[in-house]
Image (tube, rainbow, N blue to C red):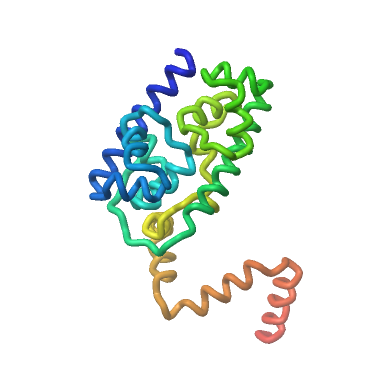
Length: 226
């Protein structure tokens, strides 16, 4: 299948998933369009698959809808109801993520040994589009990013940076709870008791100390004991 056909199909799938999650969340197209700083008509074209959303745009929508970003391109990822969030500088965050994704896109192209013109030809684009995307001046459609990821043996998940992606507070809390659930029951019970906060802080301080310092503390404790 040609990359252009793959991208067209992927845009349709992403559009359907975005529309499904948005509809379940009770959030309007207008609200989503305002978040992405585009018109309602433009957002409707995203949902219809006529235009492709970029990864930063997907992350922004996931933030608004209170779901993991991957749930908007893969229906196997669970979605959740939206939560009320504090205001964030969305325009600045989108610009930052656009730059970061552009760098990764360029790395994939270079890793595949492709020139900008060759990459544009494979993706069915005009040659001048690649410099626009790689400079971060324009959003790279998610479907095209997925094709580029394949050039260097990556997936879309590899482009999601947990430290910088736009996770909602609700999603962050769900991830914390999931990690807690993986702990042994006795450890989890100890961590969740407010009265044990001091012991946990001591453990945190000890974990940050160098081995020599810990050894000195242990030796001092032995001297006191005996």
